[in-house]
Length: 473
Image 1: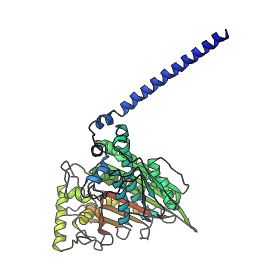
Image 2 (image 1 turned 135 degrees about the vertical axis):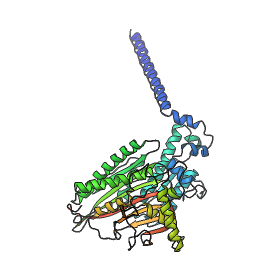
Image 3 (image 1 turned 180 degrees about the vertical axis):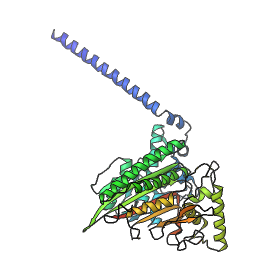
Image 4 (image 1 turned 135 degrees about the horizontal axis):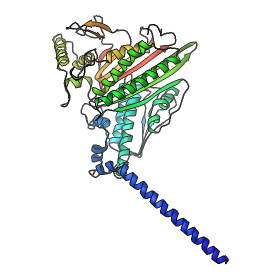
């Protein structure tokens, strides 16, 4: 009887085990089917891939593809130096990681990272921050955009089941982030928050984490809807930052700022040849003795054709504003006749970029886009958030596009002029005469040696808690 019971028990145990095994197989099979369906497009695309070069063509995201295949880019594949292959590659982040204050070393680091990825010369990339004492937000976004594109490429290769066959690079990480300010920036809005979702909250920091908007294939209405969402969230963010230093914008100021923010965001999308933009913010509340203030940083960035290139060398599928183009050419002829252009200081690109920022100037024809250009109004309105209109040693706004840099610190103001039709429009000429036909101040409008492959607006504002007057703003 005992033997019989044992036999029954063992039989039931085997039966239960068999049922579990069948259930597991069904679950694995279902998971495999779901995984296949999920990755079907990548698997189909991967059938064309016979080499790593093919993988780059098929799966490399378009922002990074532009950076490595555009001949003018500082990361053009034929300009990249291929290092010897090794398992782990360490890249030293410069003491000042800034494409504004330390161009040469900062661009070098970005080139090294892209080269290691493109040529697959290592399994791991480590960014060593041991010597780094300063990182500005626009450079961090530049780096993060590149790292996100690399991560996206690796994910696509895995979904297409070709990663193990053609791709060597497995990870990118950071180490020795000893400087407190650098550490706080990275863990609030930097690479760790996007790549591994490690987000540390600090009571004196308000992050506006990276927002990437892809407008490719979207209709005008969808782009406007996203613009409204981002404008609203950015306005709420700005107000949250101002509250930390006991400030608040009036309804009128909110409305005006919302208009110019929305205008600038839609410009960043419509005027980008890649139809893609990045938006990020970072605010830090500070106490220095009895002084209470905040540092507000904001970046709007896109890759693709520069402002100058959109006018000078438009894509075949782009509509051209011939009225603006004619005025730019007329302005160029005037500057050429006076021998004002200098190769390494002030060029036609610099002039056209400055002109394109002014109210009423757009590369898009008026019959297609009836809005005025809002970039210069954005610069003026956003800079007013600091409260007073005096220049200081910290608050700056920069526009980077190609080999042109325009710097704004409040020295030159927005003024209204009458154009040839008697229409009033706002301009900042960056000179004492207030005329765009005169040479701008070389301290604020100039040519730089390193080419930025797109357009970026970077705001860095010092806001004191006694600066902003609610009635005035």
